[in-house]
Length: 97
Figure 1 (cartoon, rainbow, N blue to C red):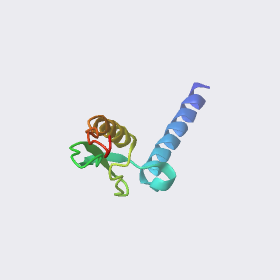
Figure 2 (figure 1 turned 180 degrees about the vertical axis):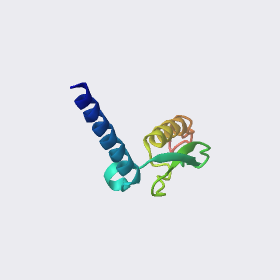
Figure 3 (figure 1 turned 45 degrees about the vertical axis):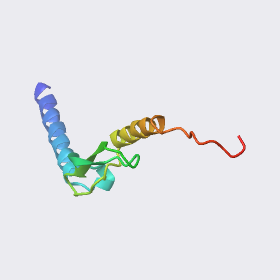
């Protein structure tokens, strides 16, 4: 019985290894991208924005997210809020007032 269990375990491990290879070599559309950090891009939150968002490239297909990722969204939101809070207030006096 122990030999049978060992044989089943070997078969299961071999199948798991085969599936891992298929996922690693398979299309990203089906299995997802294998994102690797490539660099950064300007967050573009305002005219004086100096913030950077991470840019990733897929190791399998070479696709690029151009900073369109969850971390980039968080950075843009934080940066936009800072620029909004630092915006100068209108101090002009209206005519007749």
